[in-house]
Length: 604
Image (tube, rainbow, N blue to C red; front, side, top):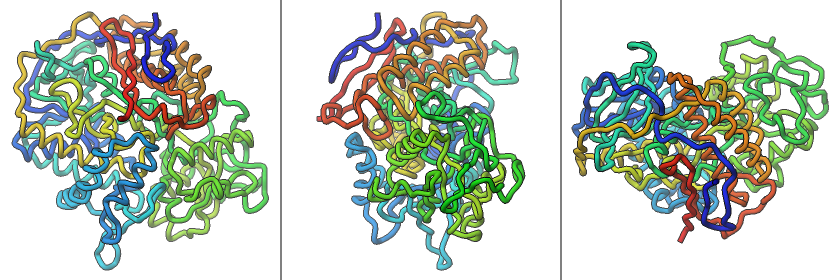
């Protein structure tokens, strides 16, 4: 029997796979002890680790690959904060709430925009070198949804890489921060009272393939990043499969707002890489000819026709990966780049007062609609008028990525299409990062603090990570938890077959991607259920990842099916308008028998 939902238009959820409350794995054969175990090594994880050290804790940071291989280093735009004397926290809050379409938590917004400037100062104190004007003041850029220049950036469009460099260096200077690399965290360890007491994990390359260890801790912080890899096309790195959300669900924690997956409007479209963003959608055609990225047969109004790109395909650095789409930051639009269709029309004019700088959901929907109407797999971004100096010095990463596929943004239009980019939802927390499981905290993209609502405002993500990493450290310093003996979850656990990953990504893209409907989501649910029946008897990293992907995909599908309206980054074709009855949040958890349970929590 499918789980039952209570709320607006209550009814049954579609049939979804039964989800494990534990991953199948051997009991830990080794253990080590620390004060706080931080899972993840991006800006949220490393900042939290450093703040915890300031509070006197010993910290162990567990990261799935190398310390620099997470999402932070890919962040191009920057960090939003009120640093201009003519700007105000109230204005930043207003822009955040407009983007969030009625679902932002005002308290979370207030603490983020108010405490943000001090967190920027902390980064500078650690050695982060933000770009500055000739007079030494911080350069401030403007991005989509912002009505003021309040984005600090570094290296032009390499902000994440610079922040990661500074944090990494600071962490390495502290002998009481232990880093465990190439380690996949499996499940939360709790004491007899249900308080978090550590994690089980598998360190690649250490011991036999089935060897599992444990880190016992007084508290655990999830900073595992996003879940973009449940889709075929994403700007997220290959490690971003929602490990933290899956672990939290198995541990009994509540997750919320998972239907709000933000698709970045302008990822670099590369024909044949990671699948077409419109695969399976009505009116979508296959990759076109023209430039190396899949160009146009038109030649009017400056749109490239049969002429070749000014570069040879493949020239430049090898930056195109099959599992990650290069990002074309909206900071480029903030400096004046235009979106054009295949006739040369600037189609964002008249759609929103901010045109190309409208909130991301508005731009992503406009691009997707125009792609469907014209039967094309991408649209165009025109930055030619910005000039070589601006493009090569302000946007060196974007310029290099374009040239790597044979597109020179100085002379050519840039092919762009939406790709899964950021999850506004995640493990629900309070204003101090506390989840519904005592001793388990969450920060960064893995968390849902209430800041983003239905749609994240550009460059608020790094800011949120910085603010809540400090708040978590402050809370732990005050509480000083002392859990009992850690225990593994009950039951043998299950794992999915490794063959499920590609069909899962295809099903999610076709039915739960940018465009959604009841029929498409029910088809996705049916596909996920079939994949869930394909279990493996061999626990190992690939099957653990496949199980986490299935868990997160099922939760996203359940939430997207239940919310029968269009709001923010959740777009239902069969319910195209927002409705006041849906002003609230969908909270999900896993029952003791593995069924997804969905609870409606109206905003009061």
